Image 1 (cartoon, one colour):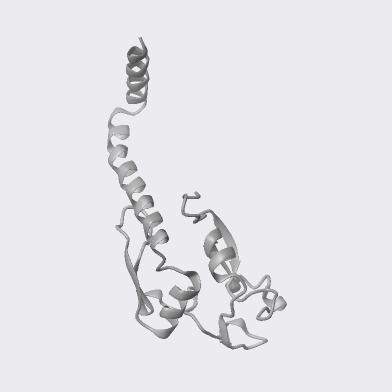
Image 2 (tube, one colour):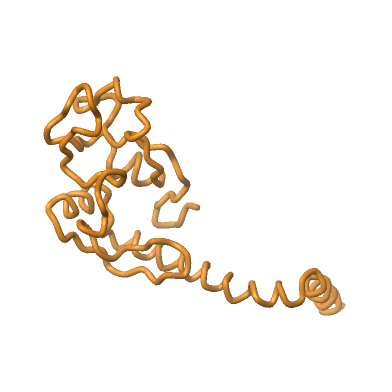
Length: 156
């Protein structure tokens, strides 16, 4: 979904450590721990080719030291609080509680006001759909048919 503020929320595959550029390591292009799902805005806009390594280990990916927390190797709750986990949980302002968390927020621009707006909209839509779901399960297809008939009746 693209919102007018420019945030493209479609999922993409991101290389946590860039595969090319000044900080890239091509050998890790297909390393499964180096591939993450990220929205297009975070992948191509905010993070880009930024360096996520503070001490590279060239033969064993899991032994790297990163400038930000690694979502596969680290517990995010030790580094950031808040944000939007998705669904009907209300978003809250995101805060870093470690240097790795602060850098993660900066690198992915997670405190930008327009992203907070996108999160609120997504939550609103999820809550609206959750409220509609019980009606659909109670009435099933009959509700849809009834609504279509009401819509047709209003046209005349």
